[in-house]
Length: 415
Ligand code: UD1
Image (tube, rainbow, N blue to C red):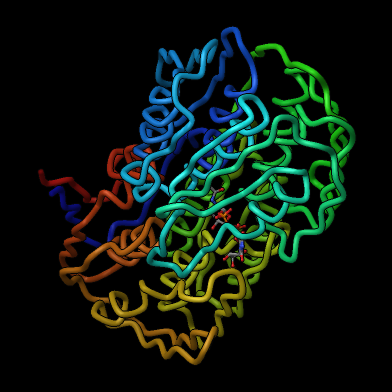
């Protein structure tokens, strides 16, 4: 299994090109299930999770070509099943459920189990499909949803679920009548998906707000579309600039998607200004400790909580980091403690007392974003850090060691 080895202490300087957003590319690729003909999607990141969804779509009959530009054709659906093997490695596989029921009238998707960051149920996806007239049953660990024709419905999500909103928005495009999603999630990735669906002929309004209205159409046509830049990857490199006392141009990001983070990082003392096609981000002098509370968009993203904690662990004072989106997303804390951080967990809060130095250690990645926090901590730590189980990082960061190395970090991958 690969390891990443980092010798810390190098300030990072230069340009980093941000890749396409994993969390936008996954639902957009799944949306190809809604059309016959060839769809062309640009700016697809080269990640393990993308390979997984491609494999899943191919098992259902998709013909797929290309990496950064992907051509995908699902003229014929040959299987309605998303197997346990694929769903267990990537929970976002559930994204095929909505489009498959809408197009084929039946879908069988393995129920995702728990994961490192909590139980993560899909009950809201299933309840919404039932509200649209689907018959949903759980059989041998698989969700089976059937509906000759889904019917438009008024849906009330208990929580703003990102993939739930995407799944039901896709299902509703081919339903009979109008569907209204209340308390919908508002993430930029949802707007990206809605734009793609609209270019396929869907009638959608309100994406990006908490009420999305979808008027069902009888069929959709293939399209050509772009994936938005990855705001979580961009945020990770922005935090890296602050932590390493560096200066990085974050090229190809969308600053509008990063406003909450930009404000928070400015409060820590960092300097952030617009440049052509991105942001210039540099460290201030002393790092001010700030409090952070994760919330659905446009709140502070839970996917940047671990990276922010690594930053605050070298802050000048006390920081309270509250995780409100997932119940168990502090797996990185024990690894940061091994590097000399001073963090105490109290319920959903982590109390972080800044220390002057982190020290290199042998660490283990536990989930995707937790592993990014270990990379950041290692970049400033004294000595050498080894991060094992890096397959977690490869799920969501494209060639992370090459991008950091080009900025001056002493980082390498050992096979
Ligand atoms: C998506 C992102 C993930 C991000 C998360 C929150 C993708 C592929 N993944 O995950 O990177 O961390 O949004 O921004 O886009 N919930 C339920 N029942 C449901 C669905 C969700 O109780 O049926 C709860 C979850 O347990 C969680 C909260 O709702 O507490 C939000 O989860 P959700 O937005 O659904 O996360 P994902 O879509 O899985």
